[in-house]
Length: 351
Image 1 (cartoon, rainbow, N blue to C red):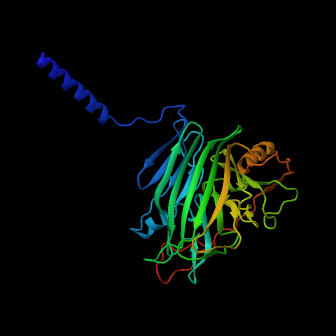
Image 2: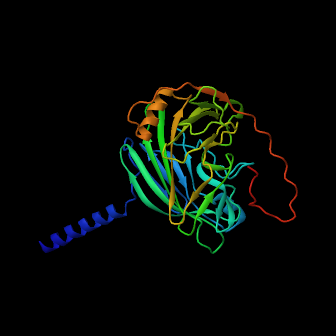
Image 3: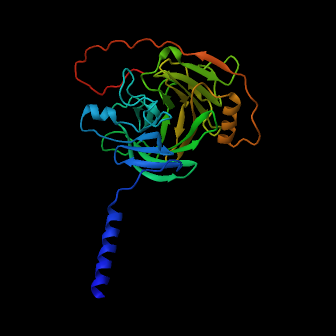
């Protein structure tokens, strides 16, 4: 009897060990949102087992090439099959600093000096850790804490909490992505004074898009992106590998006033520019934007307005605005770079 009891115990122990050693299975189909982390590299956001987004947060300064590849965190958006990004990564000239959904400013004044955290010369935006990760049937939210470098060995000029929330979108759209960036100035006042072409919260399609088919949509009759301010949203449709995608970036009314949209480039980089703003010492600036992602042509304006109302907490439905649709402007080819006297592999691109 004792021998039988011992044998049973050994079998139970063996079974428990095999269960504990078994690898975790992938999220089952229909499970809603989930995360999958490749530590030190990227965080995947999955919906029903398929990748919908990938947050790139690696930081590697072991070489000039690695530094350029990893000098800022950004968010990829994936196609409906979860197979490949429809946004641009670190590769691709002439603008390697444009990637996915990203944030940056080319002129940041701090302690009497000016810093460029758009082209990224002389410093990086460095992910420190994730302070929150929550996923469920209808939503996934995570927060990345990041330091915006000043000078080597010196305290950061900005500490950022970047919270990104994925939600299912009403048809015919696919997903909604809310980006809330809290920019704090713990080490002294910071003044952001960039220009519309090199600042803000931006979206950059994959570099392989067909530049002849990019169009922009504005919720205003006779819209002029270079003059209009504080538009509630702007949309873009582009063609990538013969597939059509439409993106709407929504501007929350709590954002600073005077926002313009840079929305006319044929290569598709577009987004909201933040006018000159000072963050007092020990205070913060909060920026809120929503991205509506659709496969195909631009969703109906009524649906876009409904999503904007939900995003902003509008007390009553917004009136449906007139629409202006404009083809993208041709972008002149980049000028050949003059031979450099000193090798600078990670020098900033001109725009």
